[in-house]
Image 1 (cartoon, rainbow, N blue to C red):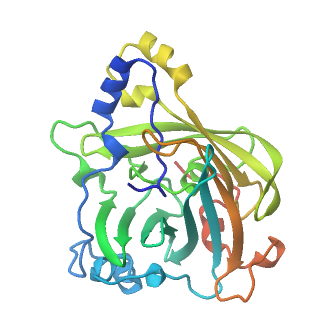
Image 2 (cartoon, rainbow, N blue to C red):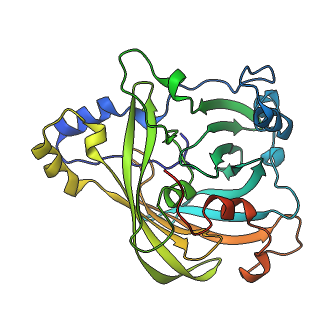
Length: 325
């Protein structure tokens, strides 16, 4: 199970309604698992070539022996580290290193997630900087250095659409997204901003999540104290059950759980904290920023001032201004 991914499930008391939701929304919400494309991928293009050379797609990602250092950030890149714990027990569920790299006019968001002493995940998302949605996504799970599962997704609306299926939104995301995607779908990272994120959950369907920012506050996490923008995300039940009567959806909506995220209120808009559930049947969890630093630097950096030149990738995605829809 991909615990690094954003997992948001409708937890409804009625077993009848719950069964219907789970039928529409398959377990873990992931599309069919396939092996990563090899270097002979027919995708083509300069970006694909860069991804192969970088080792993000191709045979290197599914080699028999790989370690958590299979993917490391280039020197000079800011790395953010978060830790996720279960609220009830305080048990550490995972620890994530994430950073951004630029390819032409796109941002590659990369995450390396440590799950246990022997299991880890590597994932990337390709975000176009001047429009919404995700262009490409790849995820691989490893155990003792051996690839166990891999998923690859590309946003090509004309190819993704199947006969008999509804049209997919052009600003589509895969079923799994990093936290920054929920800030990215806002018209701007500010109080009162609103947006909608659309995630493909089956070859025939997608689900929407309403996202809004309603106020800023000061919060403290292991990485320090920050002025934070509060962002809330909630599943739009109408996209899960489009044929259900409106009055039923209005009854269900109040019990649909929310996820709360806190982002740094100023550039580079780091994720500071997340609270809520992240996958079906999962516990309440809290994700916190534990440190951030420049790759290859001797010590983690504790303030944002020294990092002004290091976050060009995320600044290019957000910049504090509206992203065209």
